[in-house]
Length: 551
Image (tube, rainbow, N blue to C red; front, side):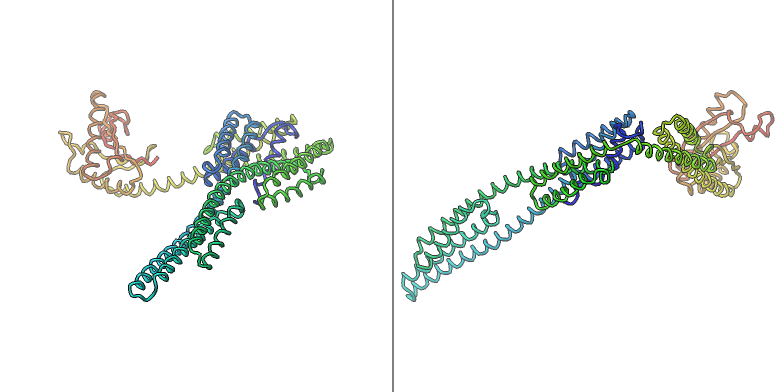
């Protein structure tokens, strides 16, 4: 395992800065967001690696720390949020490492199981062959007795040899299985005893001592099976202990790497070179020991590495002097001025993009945070200067993007509406106009007869309208009924509502426009197009508006 955790030096640097060891008095919220985003990414990777199953403790801790970090950030407690984000990130990455190891170990174990199954299958075939040979021998011996081709003594000899052959084969299979279970490593005495008994059985077989050969082979098989059982138990125990050692080593290595990155963030590689070099050198030995499986040694070396790195960090912090602080202060002032200038340029770009109109709130926030940044700079509050200037750049950049998006949408909407107006203008005997809701297709209320039903002329007109409306199925349709101011308004509203409903029903059930696109309303005389002072104006006001809701 070449690397347990990725480089997090910059994160540790910010932790030190915002804990009070550096110059800036405040934490930049953007930094907090970045740290939490890094922790979220690590947590997402841990989820993909099934860390919840393979490393439940670390996974749960990471989730808890991440939730606490987000809560602290929402409360604007950025220092605490950064601490929690760092802990969440470290726990997530430890969980990732453990999950990947467990899955790799599982694949190795599956390969071993396949190997053992294969050996068993082969040996099972050998046993079957041996049994077949014994049956053949018995049959041959029987036939020989019947045909007097061999003596009874020779036939019995053939049978006994087959029995010995079968017993020896079974013992060999058991020994092979014990060897696969690492019995030579864990229970060598029992394994050797089984091996010796097998050899004695073969020797007895060669000497013709069949009964003793069968006894010794059975004894070898029993010892081999005992060796299998004990070896597996010890192997399982050793594996569990190894996993514990590995987990402790991983934690120690993670702490050591964090300590190294903390020291490096403070330039310990230059200001405390000997101690830092020692820490890096020891870390190389740590990785070598870990890769070779010597987890206890790796853990011990990791502890030494952490001590060396922490010492280097302490030396660097004690070497901090006024001159360095002054240089950092000047650099920070320059950075603050650069950010103010950048914020001014970005605000100018936002203005040119039409942000005062298209993204008014964002543009206003950008101006206000820039003014706050300038005031903070005059008060030598550089941390606040940088933070507010960054906010200004962010808000003005967002205002630019928003303005460009709205501008493009507005142009596209105008183009679409012009295309629709051109389409609808081809419908005969209707009036087309653009409204605040969309495109209104109007026709006279005279389209209804005395019984309030649509005339044939109106139906033909609605057929043409429906054909055009079907081309724009992404938009909803509102059917509006209107009257002049004759009579009582209550009656006018009821009349206009009924006529709008009749048109909706016709469009849905006769012309086949989807009912979920349609709605209707009656406005009575409340929305006239012309004056009700004369009949010409009142006639214009008595109308049905079919509005395609494009806005």
